[in-house]
Length: 75
Figure 1 (spheres, helix red, strand yellow):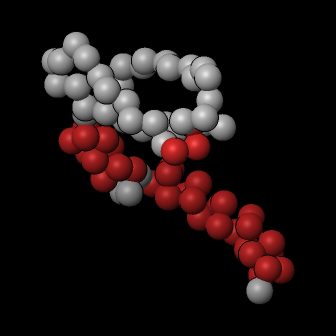
Figure 2: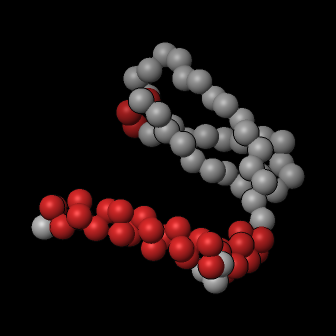
């Protein structure tokens, strides 16, 4: 059983985690702290570039063709 949530700490040195109900009967939980490098504008910029990248678009087209038959089987 896992629970994952991203918290903004903005320079604070404490974090309070409210556990979901399903964890309250447990005696132990594991907590892992991982720094997330998140530059939203940079990610948006990369997505916009990918939408115009000819190699990326060719890959998407190829994948679409590859899965066309299997998609039609589902219908």
